[in-house]
Length: 181
Image (cartoon, rainbow, N blue to C red; front, side, top):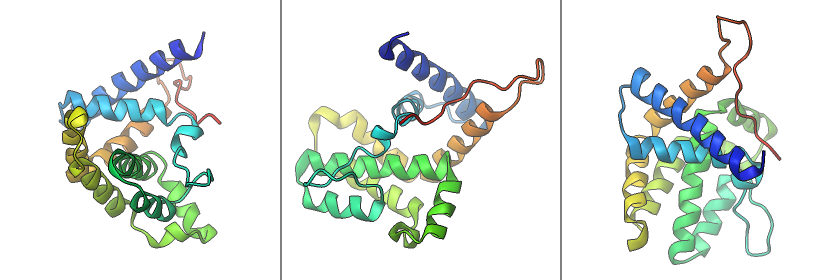
């Protein structure tokens, strides 16, 4: 199967799982929000998407502190995109892989001093307020993600539990996403 077909299948998997978890477990029936989170998960299956922000010399940025500095150095839509990515990055790690945050603290990284939830909410809010008429609908979603960050992070943790759950009917593990280098 070529990459584009597998990406579509992966997106469909995440969309179904996200709809199920958000509607049945959380009582949130919000198609644009579900679509955004599904696309985020499908995109972040690859590490190059997780760490897509680079500084001006081309070095990959792996910590929020460095991304925040980079966001302030940029203007217009480039600044908006870095802030949106910071929101996505913090939501992903907070909701799907919170053990990453604990490991980061043990490793002594500079981000250990940051509150990922607060930084994510702030980044989404900034991105939602930077004017871009072509992305008005996305700005609305980003604003909601800022205000509903904790709910979305909890929903992502429930999604992870769902895809890691064993199917009691056949005892086989369900297929789940893995981060691909």
